[in-house]
Image 1: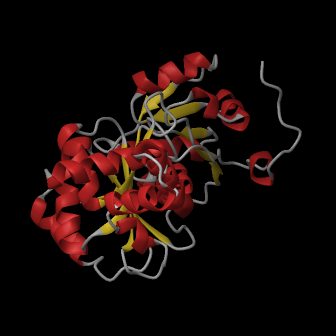
Image 2: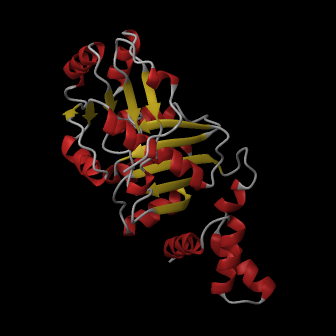
Length: 299
């Protein structure tokens, strides 16, 4: 049994005539990322609004949460949001969750939050896991300035138009993308934005979590042999010669760097690869992947 926190939020203790709307973050893969506060809130509210009730029920079962659920997704939010507002105005407290991560961020929920604010219903965030925040923190790209854009349009023309508007961006760009559209999205990005340093984060916090680091070109070459699967976050950095000085060496040929280290230190390719990987700030496996891409391109 989870003990109740000794800290009580002012908003949580001041229901007044209305119930509260809690925006509850849930794990994006690893159940251990569920917070104690989220568990408590989901047990205490009168109703949980879910993007997919069947998927959320599995999460609730894992933490022995028996609160009643109701569906709330992009196809019914136009009518469901007003219904839930009425329930909260009558005194019921509601928790909003999505299939994974923080509600409203690239997920349904804005209409409900907007209406709750307009009707004077307290909206209380219960922070949790977020795929793009986790990927950004582990990317190694500049994070002092970044722009999160969610999903680009699925249609090619609209996607290219959206990318055209980002040509002069001077900050790290962060997107979500469907695996079956990833290669086309990167091809458009290469053509419109130019060669850039990127990170493709796949299945963050899950068993098959993977970070692909390199340039757009090397990543595209890798994806030809091993198409992406699962949940994808794409982070696009600056041009190779942009504001971050260390970006330029990473865009250089990894083969030439390895050969230079081999000649200078008189060591074999495997040992040189390890040194170059460390200098580039990437894992040995990422450096090896880039090396194979360049070798295949030259063969």
